[in-house]
Image (cartoon, rainbow, N blue to C red; front, side, top):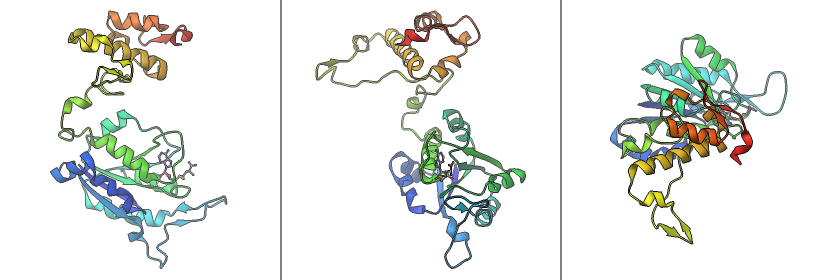
Length: 266
Ligand code: SAM
């Protein structure tokens, strides 16, 4: 995968040389090029922002500088998906990470200040570019760099060959057909500060372990993210799943579970 990141703080992205991402770059799985947006300015101050039209606090990123930069990057090919982080955009989730892990090239544009001029994504959409604006959560960061780092890591860890053990991404939270939260994890020792690992995990009975973990995933998801339970396809539920969900106050007789008694979660 080829990745271009446009930012006014290129040094932020020193992190891409660390850990598994650094190894993936070294292995040639991933080519990341970090671009300084100021390289596309022509004034002595290398300014990338200006005051908001209509008034208001702060500064807005100028369309001319972004336009010059993105025109050059798009001309380099292959045709990318352009991702612009924005707190007032749809949420970036595992679904988007999975989808974007299949593209050949990504260009990320990091906003700063009060954000970028709204015409930038609109213009490139009009040019036929696949432009995505995503928020990484309901809070405001100073800039897009942290958001891009989070999205990039979620995407590239799904690339074939990225993880040492590919199995480790198969049964994770938000992943797979049911996209539940994962069950809790334990390691040795079996007893730590008076706290024991659940007995069933020590017994060596894989079917019982699987059932225990599935029940726990359903319970935790019901408690923490009921929206994910409500999105389940009931035809995928086995008898034991149905029993657990009914005990938790869900009606599983329709296409998707519906809440009948929320108080049962507590
Ligand atoms: N004025 C904007 C608003 O209220 O929605 C906030 C701009 S923020 C200070 C500057 C830049 O940081 C944004 O253009 C975006 O690139 C990035 N950013 C901040 N919070 C983000 C979030 N939750 N998700 C994605 N990007 C974010």
